[in-house]
Length: 144
Image 1: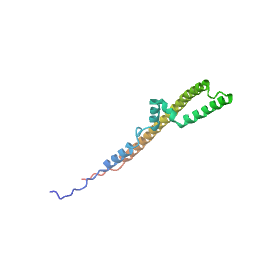
Image 2: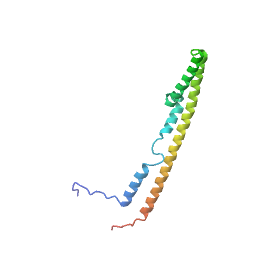
Image 3: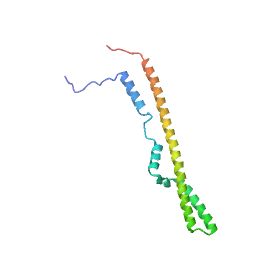
Image 4: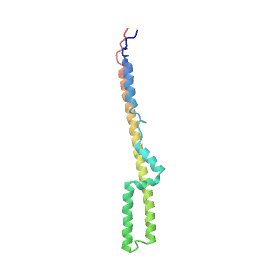
C-alpha cells in the first residue's frame, strides 16, 4: 500500500565517503580551469599586432620616439625624410622586441601555472590516498 510518503533512503557510510572524495578531487584537478597566460599567449600569437595595445610597448615606443624627435629637432632636421624613415625603423624594431619579451613572459607564467596545478593535483592525490587508508582502517558494522 502507498501512504503518500516514502522513507528517505539511507546513504551508506561508504557511499558518503566516496561522494565526498569525488567532490574534493573533482574541483582541484590539474586540468581544472583555464590557463589565463596560455590564452593570452595564444591570442598574441594569432594577432602579433596586438602587442601595440600593451602598455609596455606604448610607453617604450613613446619614449624612444620622443628621443629621436628631440635629437632631430636639435639638428634642425625634424621633418626630414631621413627622420621619418628612422622613426619607422624604430617602431618596427620596438614592436619586435616587445613581442618577444611579452611572448617569453606569458610562456613562463603559463608554465608556472601548469606546474602549480600539477603540484596541487599531486597533493590532492596524496591526501585522497591518506583518507582511503584511514577509511580502510575504519571498523565495519553489519546490520542483519
